[in-house]
Length: 380
Image (tube, rainbow, N blue to C red):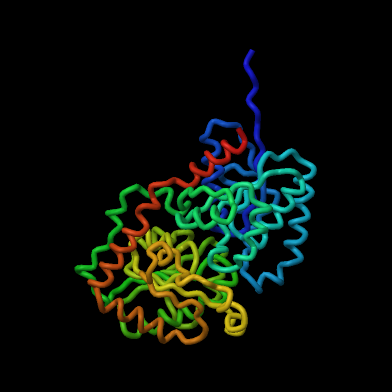
């Protein structure tokens, strides 16, 4: 008589577009293990398409830091809903991905329900908020980090950590030679430049207009230059269109960070995971992040500790791409930096090669499959 295989229920918590993509890949990878998994949770359309049953679509509300206050009531009710679900339904494992301010609450709810929690994507405590390491130790049974230096940092602080590689790179070949850009025939007058203001509402609110102003200034010098703006989704594209400044002209592309970076000559990118995708396409860039000048002077500059913010610079341990973090008001230094790059084809080619050298080792690990193996081991 055949023994019936146990079915495992995994609850997945996601709160923004990139995590939705990461966990969609994980849901698909879990199916490939041959183990009978049922995935349920909160997330976005990509998770749903991969086969995860959603209690609520949370991706459209993703915001950052102090601007999340307006959404506090919604998130409070959502956390309560998840708590009720975890108490009322048998769940074998909770997986939380990114958005630590929100997902610490989900992990706490899991702990109270007697359910183990896996954190997929480490909270960047090595950058700021290191005092929260105790909270992470209490609420995290297993941490799957996506940057190689994070493994030792968290392990030294008592967190069971495995490096799984970057989900942003898992679909790439091991050899990225073909993505090294050739600028030998580059003509700055017809440069193609991508604008990537991010996926979160707060990023778009603070960065989309200055990115357009940067492009407009460059257009006055490079008359044949063309610009393409990358939106995370169709609704984000409509948001960008509605906030397009008069006289500025660009094309729009949806959910195509890496594909766009592969076809353009240069990119202007919001700080975050997109910078690693752009680097994997060998596309030189400048990186922007805007915050409140007052909050930065009072709090941010004392709490944020690393020499670099951009992922590719952290991996290279040097400034491979310029960081305008925090960016406050004047776009002039950014325009000057981009202009200098466009006048230096040899420099652009050198940066393209150096970024590929930094990123290529990460493409050899396939994050979704690695995390799926960790999940199977935890439940064995």
